[in-house]
Amino acid sequence: MLLLYAYTDCVSSYFLVLRKSQEKAKDALEFTNEMLEKLLLKLDESDIVSFDEGFKYLGVLFVRSLIMTPFDKPKKERKVLYYPPPMNMSAYLLKKKRGW
Image 1 (spheres, one colour):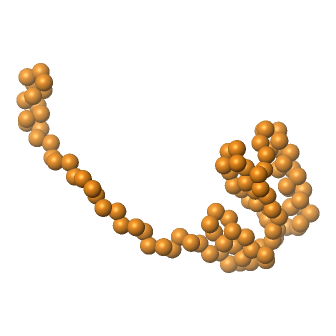
Image 2 (cartoon, rainbow, N blue to C red):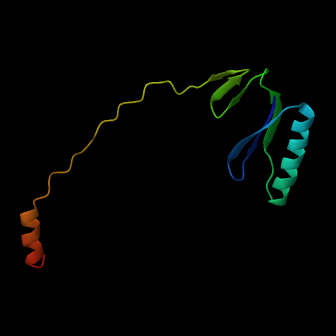
Image 3 (tube, rainbow, N blue to C red):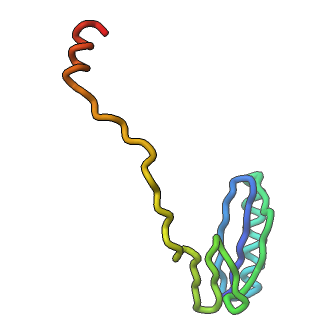
């Protein structure tokens, strides 16, 4: 299984095209360039690689049948910086009634 991966800067899009042979991947790259040209876009970066070679896509590493994600880190604890005081509804309604 071969892979074509590409990056277009104009719309900040990353995408993959999976093909079974290198020739089909090259055809897919040519077709992709033609379609993007019609949309007035162009590829900034592209490459044809196989899963045997391995590749990194959006931070995930793919090598043969192995998929490694870097997202196993513990989440950072977030603290609340400010709690607003509770609203005194009777005082609010009294002010509103008086034309506050």
